[in-house]
Length: 122
Image (cartoon, rainbow, N blue to C red; front, side, top):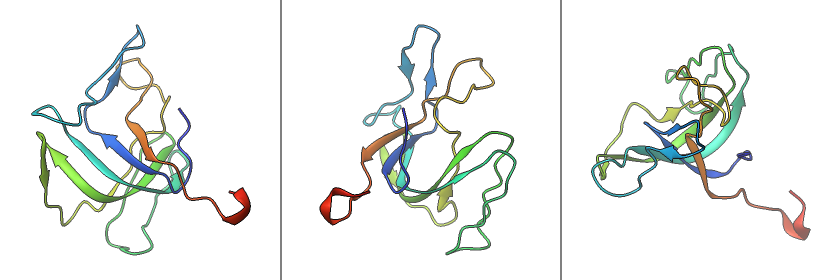
């Protein structure tokens, strides 16, 4: 699934796509719900460092794969919204990247597509 820039998304902490195509770890309620919500502000090419413009000390140092840079607006852990003061950015792998478990990642889901300009142009 393609995730457009400036989409509002939910990035799951423990999502996994299995060989049969089933995805687990994407609960939004209950004790198994663990995720961050926010806006995709950039795409980070594999191996490059991203320095958030609004917080140069909050570095996201992605490893060798392409990643989304997501500005976090909400965090949920074990089904409860939690306060966050330090991790204002997350950088999950781009959906479809092969995980170390041998299956494609599917950690990021679009909640709301990016806004469009007047006249329908994106």
